[in-house]
Amino acid sequence: MSEGIFWLEGHSVHDPRGDLTIYQCSPSEIPFVIKRVYLLHNVPGGSLRGGHAHRTLSQAFISVNGSATITIWDGNSEEVFELNDPTKALVIPNGLWREMGNFANDAKILVLASELYSEADYIRDKFTYSEWLNVKP
Ligand code: TYD
Image (tube, rainbow, N blue to C red; front, side, top):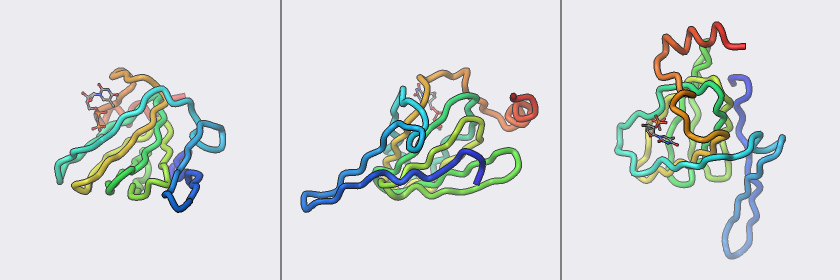
């Protein structure tokens, strides 16, 4: 797995009224302060999303309903993760290329982000990404 990516198991509390799953910001859980939350939903079948890297943004992806895949490229190797379980968050540090696909009709993907939206933080073509990998600190 690329350095810094990990699955975070939420703390689930089960009782007869249903399940409650908790994610907290702390060094051993979500390792950043959440400044922004967004939701991917109503995604038409066959859509591809992502296709970029972030210079500084860290994120956590949680499928709150349905499923989708996220493919991570770190400049050397590629890895595919399936988001399909609301009790697990995939934490992705900055600096990794990602593509998302295979969205189920009912997919709802919640994204927790460490920074406010900034288009300047995106690297949207792979050539620029390769150049950035060579010069980043
Ligand atoms: P983008 O991050 O490229 O989406 P994805 O990675 O899911 O394919 O964002 C799509 C568009 O939405 C783009 O024009 C930027 C805009 N956007 C915002 O205005 N604010 C946000 O917080 C996000 C995530 C996107």
